[in-house]
Image: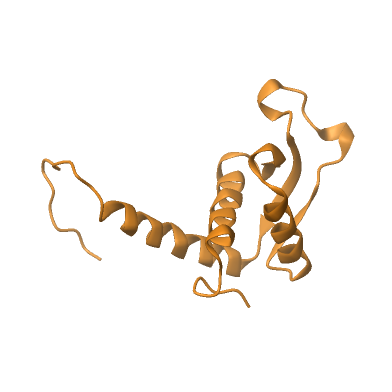
Length: 111
């Protein structure tokens, strides 16, 4: 079973890319934005049933300029969704710790 602690930096990055594909691109994955290691990880995760990952049938690939390389699809298990959310939060906290600009109106929020 995957946990953030056991995942490599590359795996965590791929998880967030695939999450973005699901949220912003109807689950379509563009291989032009992945390398061979990413593809192998996605295939392994699919075999482990952490995600579902496969090819879009040729007749259904949209031929618009922004979709040319979107020839795969992805779906997440509940566990993958949970880890993607955790990684988003951790990544956000890392980025916010580096903020160098002033924040007008910043107030404490409920956690």
